[in-house]
Length: 401
Image 1 (cartoon, rainbow, N blue to C red):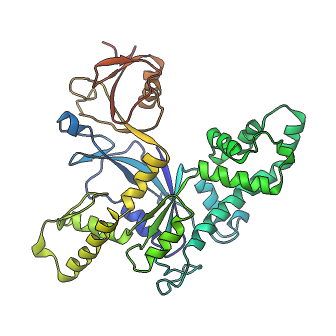
Image 2 (tube, helix red, strand yellow):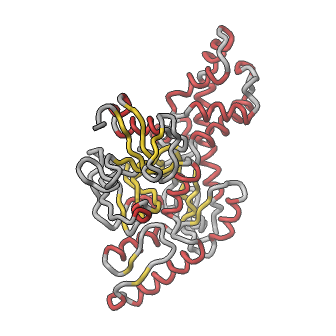
Image 3 (cartoon, rainbow, N blue to C red):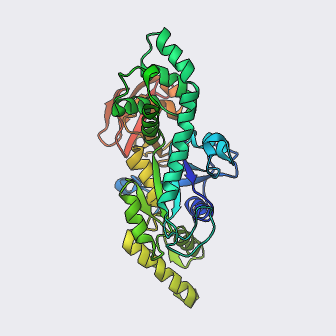
């Protein structure tokens, strides 16, 4: 399962973001894992379900469908906090970096109202520059990765001198245990121009340049600009956005409020909606009405509370995931137990039909014969590249009748 890492210093709203992202106001199904550590939760990627296209009522197993919107589970890890010198093991630095290497992408929760100082203490809005937090996290991560490369540089230099291994082959060997994939290493080498420069001649500046690039490509980061409903936030959002691509205004408290109101039947709201509907006005107090009004203004300004947008941005824009629906019965779109559109898989763009078979069950991959595109009714081969919202039947030697 895809995993997102959540980082941020004290009092910026990280815990509120975590709770808001992992709280869905419906009963959830059993997941294919039994034990969840306290710092790991389930958030959801949101997409329009194909049930609306086919005009059927589905009953998913591991994902959730509400009003034609499919919510697909994604793990979110509340990463240990950072302190200056974390790359040298200070504070919870080692735990942070061990957690961070497991994830596919990072969400950095930042108090863009400027009301949390460098040490995480509350201060007056606008009294602190939150861009310092963004730079701090990136620098600590870069210094950690750089220290690992430099630590192994003696061995790496020997490898370069005694073998004909290329830079990318050497670095793959050195970075394989850090959750850094080969494509990120290759891309970083090409973008920095260091692919053809012998690694044993790299300067410290070369190493840092490579480190920054490989971090950006292997651990992409979205900045959740939290507390964006405070008046001092706008200028800070603009300033941070000048140097960072993915900056999303958020109100974690607003999202939590709407989910609580939804559970209590006060509003109708789904995570990521661009509005909400009051359902039980008679039970709304004057204070609640005022707070809901503030949240409504925020949503009108930014299009949502931002929490779901952060998750979707990571899944669909940065990591370029697509959603596919494997079924066993092409007529009823069911599995063998009769569940309609039972599964929605988040897969990488470029995933093949045979790879999907392996994800469903290893035996399906071994006996793979072909797949059927439910829309076109045509057979497709093992190398067929899946498209977003494909509904696919896998035919193997095991299930062919």
